[in-house]
Amino acid sequence: MASSSISSDPEKTTALPQFEHPELMQEIVQEGLILGGGAAAILLQVANPGVAQGVDNHSNFSYRPLDRLRTTMTYVYCMTFGTPEEKRQVVEMVHRAHAPVQGADYNANDAGLQVWVAATLYAVGVDMYEQVFGDMDEDTAERIYREYAVLAVSLRVRPEQWPADRKAFWAYWDQMIETMEVGDSARNVAKDLLYNKHLPLYFRVWMPWVRLITAELLPPRLRDAYGLKSTKTRRGAYKATVSFARATYPFMPKVLRTWPKRYYLKDMRRRLRAAGHVI
Image 1 (cartoon, rainbow, N blue to C red):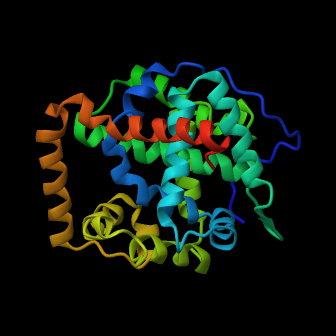
Image 2: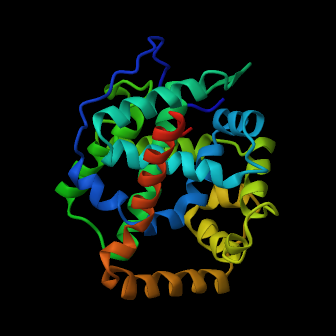
């Protein structure tokens, strides 16, 4: 199981970290455009064999592929915008959902796996944001990176297990990308994600575009391992898509750009009131 040198914290705790109001991170997470990288983030996550086996063996991903998007975005939005009580409830739900997800060589509560999942959300989210809004200055980028630690340390990860700064993060990232091996479980998840017949029709019509964006966002080594293609024509289509987004998206009304955030937070609060759980 690829999980880097980060070890699990044996102490089980639901204590929340000191990231009550990550203001700079909110500027990125609120933008609906980051959902365009959602499939790439999932494939990066399951490139880690421990994550892949957990998803492939313990979820109904093939029949309800949108559930992972909903639960992931609920967690991200809650940790970024939720109240302390909402964060406490959602973190406890994640712990309960992770408890049975374990096997001979994987465990959903392994800190290394949780760091990796959070790392993919940071890397893809910031990449999508900067491709449209432009590069951030060094100080802002570093502060946003530190705030993104909330996605890891809200679970079983100790603060010191999140790479100390962006230089350390990208060294960790490169090492993971170069050493992870995409296995059958990851390929099963990729097939269910990118070619799923159970998706609603309105989602399926967008899947060729999702496959294009996903292939171009993935590092070449992993893209090849998943059997995805990057041709001159596809790279041109991707560049045209990014250029169009750069010319139009920042000028859209903010109420439209942030609609996914409001939708998922409203859904989370409705589920908490109605059934006491969202995961």
